[in-house]
Amino acid sequence: MLKELYNAIRGDAAPTVIKIGDRNYTSKAVVPVSTPTPAKLTVSTLTGLVDYLKSNVDGLELSNLLCHVESPAKVTLNSNLLGDFGDRAAFIAAELQQLQIPLNKYLDAEAFNILLQSCFVEPDDPMKATDRGLVLKYTANVKTMVEGVQADDGVSQAVTIKKGIASVENVVMPNPVKLRPFRTFVEVEQPESKFVFRARNNDGMEFMLVEADGGAWRGEAMKNIKAFLEAAVPGLNVIA
Image 1 (cartoon, rainbow, N blue to C red):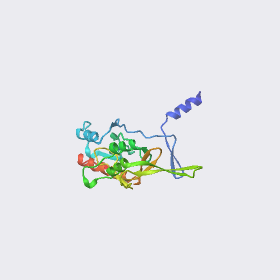
Image 2: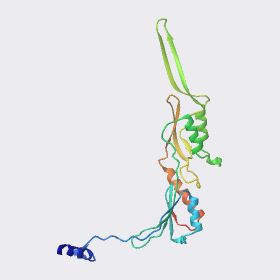
Image 3: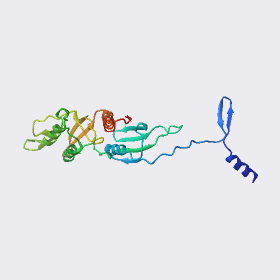
Image 4: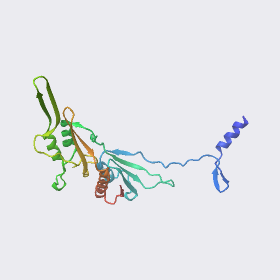
């Protein structure tokens, strides 16, 4: 009983600093007290984040905010450092509901054509035109070729079948191709990337696009987001 009382008294006692050699120690474990922060809002567009800033319903001071472009699909609005431990409050985040574009895998001709027309953008500026039209022209004019050669000596027959890819028109398969898939927020320009374009006959034509820019598009997309936010909200501190 006395031992339990002694341990309870020790547990309620404030921690003390004990010096052993050149180092300081405490008599018990201590943890920092976190600074209370508000619950984070989430939107799916950059426009939603800009509207929040312009309406300023929470009475935030623009100079005390830091907008962090974390990726081509996520931007967070944070406070400056809070307290002695460098905590930050995250007020709102724009998180893209990203399209799942099936790259690096073969698709049949119909699915591939639908993919090109629905998930890849073609800029109005002729100077920024991509190779989307050229790829669509190739896929529309390619067909499966089956060639048969028969030999007959009067006793036995031999038939050789060759399969391959032939073009209905004289259209050269382009490689690599420059395309702009939807990979970041629609408010900014979609980065152009190089892709390796492949075709094969697998009981029907199949096509594939393989990313070939080493992920450089990510840096360009984040730079575009930064420029958009700085223009939309002058004075906002934005890092990417």
